[in-house]
Amino acid sequence: MSDSPMPPRFVPTLTDVVQLGVAIPALTGLKQSAVLTAAQPIQPPIINSEQAQEQELPQMSQAMTFETQLKLENEILHRVMQRVDSALESRLQDAVSQIVLAHTQTLAPRLREEIESVVRETVMQAVSQELYPKVF
Image 1 (cartoon, rainbow, N blue to C red):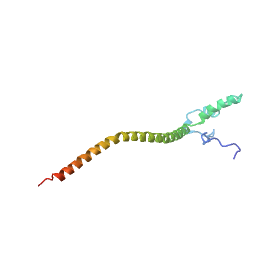
Image 2: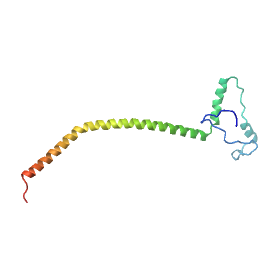
Image 3: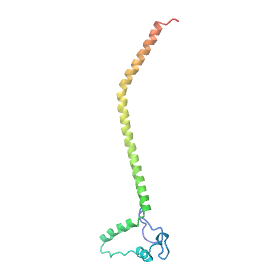
């Protein structure tokens, strides 16, 4: 083990070691000199720390493979959707409960009138049947 600190969780790490003398199936059509020059990038000298930081960003972005970027995007999307989902659920619950309460309050007088009308007609029919029973 080395004494270097662990990198942050989202920093890509080297997972495959490529030997220069080993033929790569996808690159067999290329000249070996092109493979060797591509495997050994030339870096300009770094003058100060600001330039070092500016150069680290492109190197890090180049080091991230498409798969790593896709995994990172999916993880970020998942986290954002979880936060949106919980916030949206509570806000929608409040909005729907306010709408239901408002509609219930406007329906209450109409419901009372309708119930009163139905009860009045039912009582009138019952009384009239008691007073004037039909003879069969």
